[in-house]
View (tube, rainbow, N blue to C red):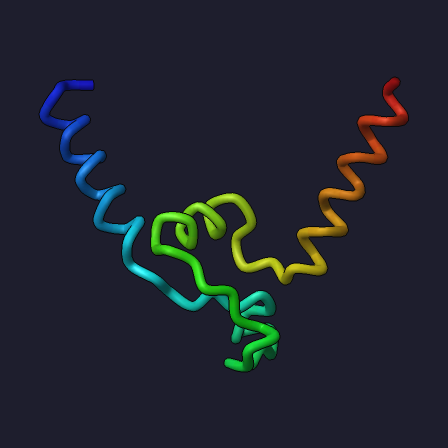
Length: 77
């Protein structure tokens, strides 16, 4: 990656890192409401990373997925 591209990505990260967004733990499309117990305040960079990793899964779906992964790893020794 060129120096110019590295500078561009670094700049984008800094801009996104300071900008707060509301993340719905249960997505609106799955019935999640804009209530304090369903909102997680994240900077835009982490919010984007969350959706890259987990899509629009609910927090419960993510926990269940991680527990299944843990069980598979344990069963493989």
